[in-house]
Length: 141
Image 1 (spheres, rainbow, N blue to C red):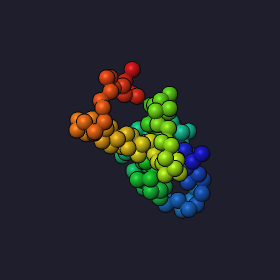
Image 2 (image 1 turned 30 degrees about the vertical axis):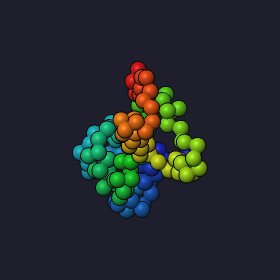
Image 3 (image 1 turned 180 degrees about the horizontal axis):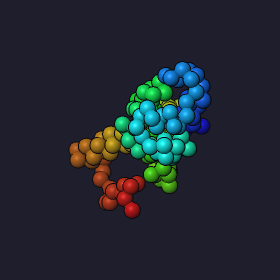
Image 4 (image 1 turned 90 degrees about the vertical axis):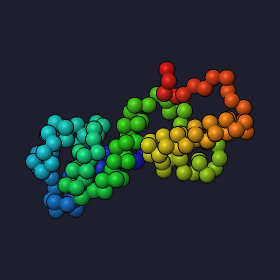
């Protein structure tokens, strides 16, 4: 399993190879970023990252790639929100997808879902495939 967002932040805080050149504390991050101690503490404990702005500030302070970290955060938020719907996101049987599925983030999978839904709708409207009697979405309850 890949490291979680908070685990990566915690690891970077403990070493000297961050942007500060010394191990850092939550209090130091609080002073530098103006985000609350409690907010930072929750993220370090692997609770969800709330905003892109927070992610960018934290990554800038620690010298991390903010785009990669935001992708991890989005994936964790997606998984947390849809943790009981994992069956809907099983990789297709095709070997290409099997080999690469685990390399996708939650937001990548959501984008693929949107693309596929659009392709299916186009095929149905053109009569290439038959339309189902009733379409159910994984997020509808």
